[in-house]
Amino acid sequence: MGRRTETLPGGIRFTDLVSLGALARYVPIETVREVIASSGRKEKRVRLLPADVTALYVVALWLFREVSYEEVLRCLLECLRWLGSPLKVMAASKGAITQARERLGWETMRSLFLRIARPLAKKKTVGARYRSWRTVAMDGFTLDVPDTAENAAEFGRPGAPRGKAAYPQVRAAALAETGTRAIFACAMGAYAVGEQTLCRELLPSLKAGMLLLADRTFLGFDLWTRAAATKADLLWRVKRNARLPVRRRLADGSYLSEIFPSTKDFRNRTGGVPVRVVEYTVRGSEEVHRLVTTILEAEKAPALELAALYAERWEIETAFDEIKTHLKGATINLRSKTPDLVRQEFWALMIAHWAIRSLIHEAALRQNLDPDRISFVHAVRLVKRTTPSRADFSPSAP
Image 1 (tube, rainbow, N blue to C red):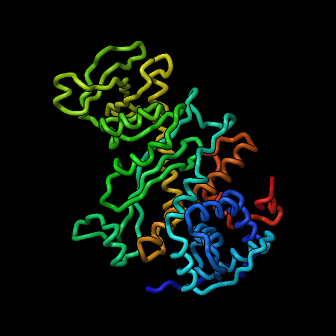
Image 2 (cartoon, helix red, strand yellow):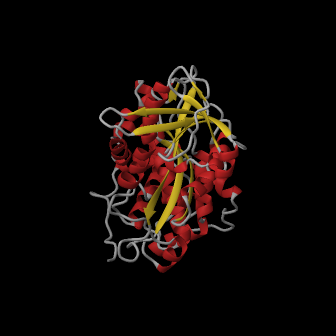
Image 3 (tube, rainbow, N blue to C red):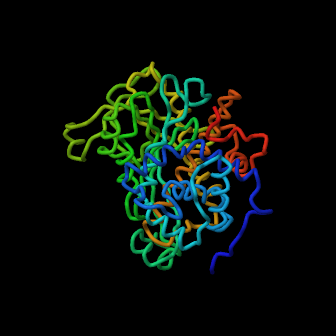
């Protein structure tokens, strides 16, 4: 069924212009131009839709999911004029918009995400640290894409009880700062690409002073040792059947053990790396949960504190819900019908989420609040319907 052309209620409002001004604050057009120039996408002749405007437009699509391509562009152009942009840009048809997006390419949007996305928490950010560590989490998610032959061939479909699923899907993995839910590293691929494979692309974003939380599906010798080599500390859950021999009991109830690259190495006790194991149960359940960590000294991170801290891993699941439910929409696929534009749209989605999380973090800092206490849904509404009195969201604001 074709998409019905929708417009903004009551036409473009001043508040819509302020909304896009807020976006431009966290995705500065100067940075967009630098990324475009370095990626070789800068136009050699004047275009109806320049590459820098197209890049901002693709991100803006995620703020106005309920309206048509043309209406979002019209609103963005009004915003650029309101902000005093000297660009001479005219409204364009849907076909011209698609051509501009194809010229821009998806690599530019990925480069833009890599350029701007970073952990947000500062020393005074409430709830962003455990002792001296900045806590981050790693996990994966999937997104439906439009059901076209090209998308299905490129990305594949998940299985279903009868045949294949209705829509092709892309798979992604991400690193998020648990205190702010800001996703600062991401990788995407076809549905058949495993999460552990994608996660290897994220590891260069880990730094000393971070404490990485991850679920039990990720623990493998190769990924563990690669992640530990970044100098970040690790706290991962392990599967019930993982063999972790007790080497030495510690005063806090945890114990030292080893993980091995193979069953043969386990039997011969060769090639293992030391880990500390924390076992605990949750009130109301008899299931024993097990965590392994690179923090071998109990006095630096007591077992009880680590067991409580692990619950912070769910912050990345909340971030994924924000992306899939409140930005993308629970019943709406990505719009793009070709693989390259799907990739472009994906990276624009990640940029939009990071920008909104930046807005939330800034608001939390001003009020000395935990960013978790500020509703993402409310922030999205604020970005869409900011009151005229908040015109200081202009990119030129302090």
